[in-house]
Length: 572
Image 1 (cartoon, rainbow, N blue to C red):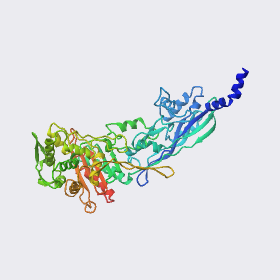
Image 2: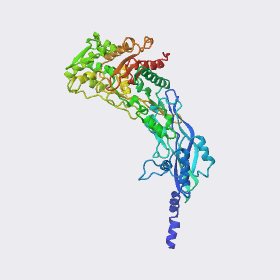
Image 3: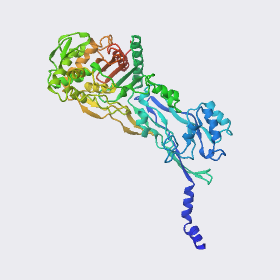
Image 4: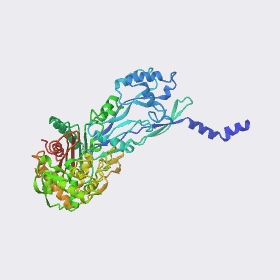
C-alpha cells in the first residue's frame, strides 16, 4: 500500500492533478454580435439594438429544493407562456433529445425570452427571492429600421438551440443564406467550478468576433417605390372589380444581373420574429385566407406569362429561318389543326412586320410559327428549346432560399394546339417574376444570361472587404445581335404607340426610352394575371399582379411608377 501510495502521489501526481483540474473547467460560449445588412448606399436594412432578455441559470435552479419548478411556474405566468415551453428551451440536448433543447453550455444563462417589456423585466429584478436563477440583461436583438421594406429579401431569425449557444439562426432570406458570414465567431469563456457546480473563477477567455456586414445591391429608394407601386396597383385593380390577391415586382441591373429591388405583396413586418413569434402572428403569416404573406411571389410564385413570352417565341422563329425583317399576315383568327385560335377580341391587323406584331401583340402570327414548327419538329419544339436558353424551366440560382423553377414542357406535344398556346405564354408554361426579369435582362444586354445576386460584398467588422459577390454568367442566347436589336426596337414601340402607350402617356420617352411588353394571361377558374416586362439600357423592371386583369391597365402603370423613381421623375 505504501508503494502504491508513493506512485499515485509522487510518480503520477501531476497527471492526476491535471485531470482533476480539467474535470472542473467548463467551457461557456460567448455569442458574437450579428452583422448588419445594408443597401447599396450603406443605409441599414437590418441592424442590432439592445433589448431586455430574460435568461435562466440552470446551475441555480438545480440547487433549489424543488429543482426550480416553482420559479419556472412564476416566470411562465409573467411572460405569458407555458412552463413546459420554458423547460424545453433550457433542457440539455442529448442522444434522445435533439430538438427543442439547449445545445450550449449548462453553465451559462439560457435565453428564454427576448425583447421583453421593461416593466416585466423590472418585476423580476425587484423580486429576486421569487425568481432565483432568473437573469435579466440587455442583449443585442435584430432591428428593422425600414419596417416592412424588403422583408422577403432579408428573412428572419428563429430560435435554434443547436446553434452552439447563440440562440437564434437565420431561417429565411439573406439571413439564412449568409448565416456563416453574419453570425460571426463565438468566443469561449473557461470557468472553474467546484464539486457542487458553483463557478469559482474565470480561467481564460477568448473574445467573440462580430459578424460581417452584408452589403447588398438593393437600392432602398427603388425598393420602397416598387412596394408602393404594387400597393397602388392592387388598390386600383380592386376598385375596378378585380380580386388582385397578390403581386410582385423585380428590378435588375441588365448588364450585371444584380438585384436592385425585389418586392412582394402581401408582405409583413419582420420584427414579429424578434423575441419569438406569437402563435397568432405565425398563423396569420401562413394563412391562405390572409394570402400567405410569408411566400415571396417574386421568386416562389409561378404563373403563365402571357404575351410577355412572345420574345422567346419570336427568337425561336428567327432562329428557324423566318426573316426578322419580313412581313406576315395577322388575321383575326388562325386555324391550328381542327380548331380556330383567335387574336385578342378577334381583331386582325393585315400584313405587318414582326416589330408591329410585338407592338400590337398579334397572337395569330405566333400561332402560325408554332404550328409550322410543330409539324417540322415533332420530338422537340424549337420554341421550348429557345425558352430553356432564356433560362426558363430551371431555378435562376439567386442567393435566396426556396426559389421555384417554373415549368417549360419538353415540347413533344401530340396536339398542335398545345404548341400554339405555348407560343403566347399560355398552357403548360409557368414562370416566376424573377425568371422573366432575367430573360428580359438577357434581351437588353445583348444575350448574356446571369444568375442574379442580391449580395454585393462581405465587409468584416474592421472594414476589410472579405469577399466580393459577382453574379455568374450561366448562358448566352443562341440568336444574333441584329435580331436582338430588332426585337428591342419592336418593344420600344410598345410604350410609345402599342399596348402600354396609355400607361406611359406623357412620359419623356424621347429622353428616357423604355422598351416593354404587356401580358394578360388567362387562368382557369380565376381572373387574368396582369404582366408588364420592360427595360432600358441599364435596368429591367417586371411587374406581376395576380388576378389583376389586363397587363396594360394594371401592371404597366405600376412599372411606370417604378421607372419614374429610377429616372428621378415626378410621379403622376
